[in-house]
Length: 278
Image (cartoon, rainbow, N blue to C red; front, side, top):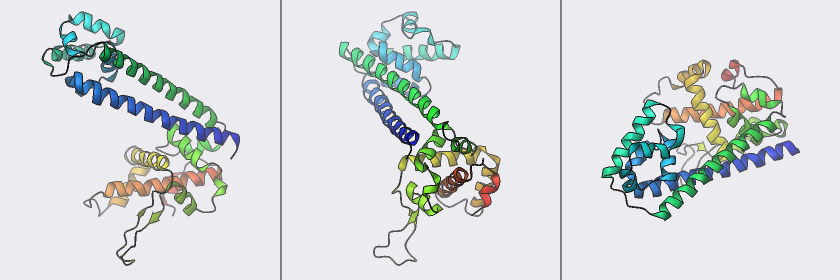
């Protein structure tokens, strides 16, 4: 592959590693520090993560929070409380600290919380910088703009597909593209006849590519008119089958990958007519 493509693949790999670090830090903060010391805070982790991380960084011990005036507690979180709803949420957290069942902490808790939150912020900054660099490299490829024209393909999905396919002419047919992604069909036939063997996707290719394509298929099937009509037609008569929507979205992801490969070869933007081509 050319230098730009190698750099793109390296940066995509770096982004995945940084994402794993981010997830590990979030899990450590939520499932260890918060769960042990202030479990009542956990339900606010999704809706008010910024404020919760501020509490973890500066004062996670509920007994200390309960002994503070609300004004002093709110001041610890800085100027982030811009709305009335945010202020009311923080006030409820302050009230919950009085009857919290969490363990009392000390200097070690405060130190660990500060280190983990700072590390999480640094990793997120690194992810943003990496995404900016990925976009800069992707803009060097004319195929990138054609991938972005596909509904459900944002900068992240388009860069992953571009990095996986690379030179579209290195594949002779669609089956090779599907095999590269692990979306090709295979069946385990040990002790079974061919009629009893149920074909499933092989999952022997690039897992991150399959995940990105499924997310693109999910978004397109609920937000784009052409994809919604296509998806609904494929479900007719099978709506009550267990897991049928997931199966159909996997099939839609397969079609989207073939469409992406075709657009890269032909160097043309997406046309809804591609949905009805076999």
